[in-house]
Length: 312
Image 1 (cartoon, rainbow, N blue to C red):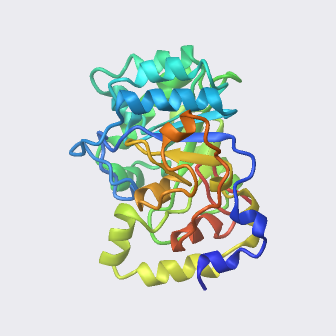
Image 2: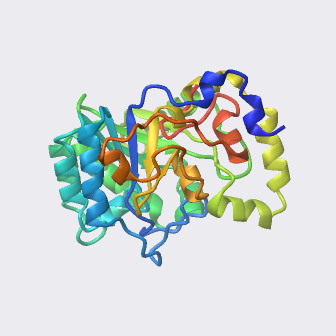
């Protein structure tokens, strides 16, 4: 059955209260993770222009967003990253940065650790497992040890300890299967990371791999694509529809186009209604009908999935 046919409540096909603007600063990254739906890497060159950033700031001023969610690539690698955060703080009460952690050990980026703390930036970090073997398999040799060192630096500044310095992790499965139960995985992560490394953090969010980008290539290469799509469809949960992230956010690409989510952005499925951030900056409405496709089953399987964890 087509995903759109699963949505019986007409209200769930439209946006609800818009709270979040998610901004993808580009596809440049110091890593090239095998599960990356953006297909980011050090070889990519796509990066947001200053003009588009200024349109975003105007749109934040025009509309009552409560959260700016900054992602990439590695968003820290954008030349105007610090300036953008400093300006955005004038218009939005909370800012999330999605970090791969290891960028913060590279030359020229270590200053961002105290910058994050001074500006109370909420950090959501990719940590797909609490073991070195699994993390390095997905993200590259040495990534786990580097991540642990950076987390310890963040803990030393109060991240994961002080109320205003939130440090969350994202878990995604290392193959063509659904994530385990979020609360149980969070307990395991906290116990193992505390015992083995003395590390603390706030929350663990589970995220189902969307069948797009590099993960889609892997599924097809290993002959698991049909199996995985069937798995997602078989575990469809109607209770997740009301809280799908596309209903409360807008996603902005590096070149200023609007999408319902970062996954639609990578598939070039542009949003209905206003099509560019420049239009939002001019005051166009952010209400719209959401554009669905078959990859949306990933967000509705089991307990649901979003950029901030389960939805049901």
